[in-house]
Image (cartoon, rainbow, N blue to C red):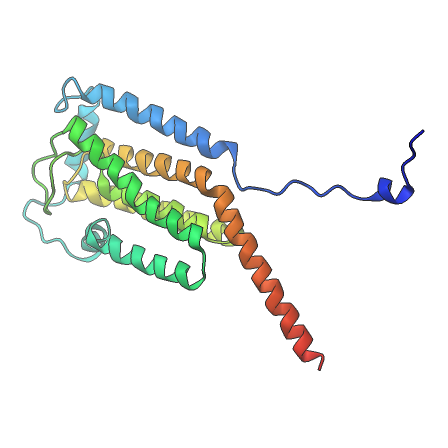
Length: 243
């Protein structure tokens, strides 16, 4: 008969490590993909006149800036942020992550900048929806979806992922407000219909959330490595102070 020692019985079982993946991440990403597929299907037969074109025209009539108006201030900043300026911001983020030696986070941030934009360009070329026609800034072809909004949403989620959990509660309201103002600015500039900005938000969120789900275990590995380095430094400082 085999007996188990009391010490063995009292040995606590180590809980499984949290890999950072959550079911809601891929569920939200899949839901976003389904929404974009349905919206694309409504546009393909007649990109100029989808069934919600009346909503777009109404919003355009009350939101668009004056024709030939000067683009300055906040809308000028937002227009630049969704363009080349976003690359500068991303380079700063990558440099900071490199200094912190968060290598997997660097790759995640780079792909978050690249992949959603590629999806947006793919949809632009598939649908080729005409823009409002009186844009106050230079635009390329294809109104659906808004690339500026895609980039902004991806940026907001990416920063949230990289921040400590406590800081995310502060960042989320700021980021959501940033996205809403960006969506408004694209319609004010007559660069997009309002439904294009909604699609841009869904594309940016869906792709970035899927990247988050895929990278969660690797990001958790980065965090664990940083925690070990921090603990080691604390032990060295404690040892030095004892002499």
